Length: 194
Image (cartoon, rainbow, N blue to C red):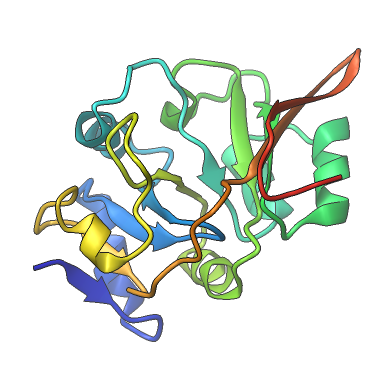
């Protein structure tokens, strides 16, 4: 049986789980996401193993606000400024990392996919936690994402911690965009429409 952390629970339990490299399942605008500290090599590796995900494929991140994303190492650029006008929203921006910044969730790359989610409780949780979390879909690669507790049980082990425990709405994932000198490029069409 999975351990569910209530929204008003003791945040020290979550901090301990993250420091041990344990995986959280967090509700997002559409489905559950697998969450670890994006700066944790052990946590990121645990997600790759669980999802059977190809190494080198970056993990997206959710932040409480733009300031958290910048603190993580994201360089504010035109795409981030565009997103800031729409956030919170299911809009993920692939943004450059500042020179010299290495974030394990970026899988060795120089960009990171980040969003401020349109989920009030999740944003408040991230704010209280004090840093962003990864938010890759809670599933094994190629399988449908988990939308409720019963969907998470076959995926997660007893060490995982489910945040909230509610049913998520399902449907489209976030829209993913990037910015270059050629302008805005949609990498994945999703819940957010311009």
